[in-house]
Image (cartoon, rainbow, N blue to C red):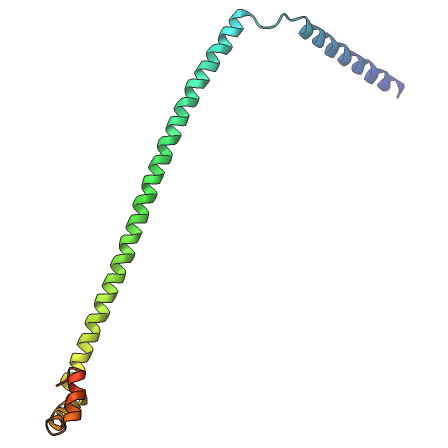
Length: 135
């Protein structure tokens, strides 16, 4: 058991030595060379150009989305307006056809004819029928 613990201690000390040696090697480095600085400047300029292109492309995409939204909203408005106009037209036409059908074949036609006959003798009935456009 003691042999295993001594090997663990030795391994731990060896790792600490390597770590310390690595840190001292890093500390002794001189920093960036001129070639490294040129590369960083080149990467920075390339990144700036790329970001400008991405910004421009994003702006174009947003303009296109606004155009699509406007077209879609306009189409929806036109469809709703057409549906309202069509409904109103159909209801009016259906009402006129219903009244015409009732006048043609219903008892209402006979009642109006009877009232017109009565209106020839009674002035009050004639006035009432004129007010409603039936005489």
